[in-house]
Picture 1 (tube, one colour):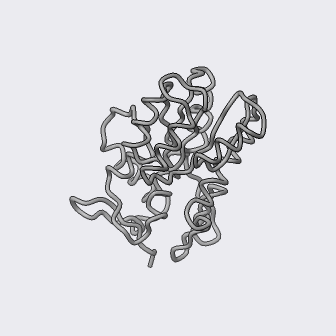
Picture 2 (cartoon, one colour):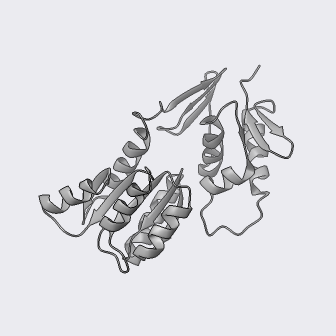
Length: 221
């Protein structure tokens, strides 16, 4: 999953980004409201963590502008303010949830995961079964039959993109966009490296290469 953090307190933003990256998310960070709106409008994000008090454009305006354009990405608002009016205003502009600073990082992660789970019609089940392969995207655990397969954070993130679209072709670009952050400028063939590792750990026949198009996760035979 790819997240965008729009927060002008740089130390807080980078701390959140570091923690969420360790949770397995690809994270982009901007510190200005106008840049945040541009990135949110142009990028493909699964969730936005949005501060209210921002230079250039405040979080209320960013949220209402995205919603007016039909962008339904989940938004978790952050603010140093406190009071029912501020919370109501944030939610009225289309935010999905609200946290008042200072907040517990554990609580923020729980809110992020909850919003991602319920995204769109209650959200998909975190449990995915394909033959004897079972993937729990909430607990971040993978099993082949009765045996648990231990994956690194990035390996799991690549597999997650494939399992969420099992049976479909997922392009290398789609995987890069959701697993690596906006600033990644390395070799795009890094995806091939991780797919190769997943095949070694999960079985060679699980992930099919569709030449010139991408990869498709198929039920093991």
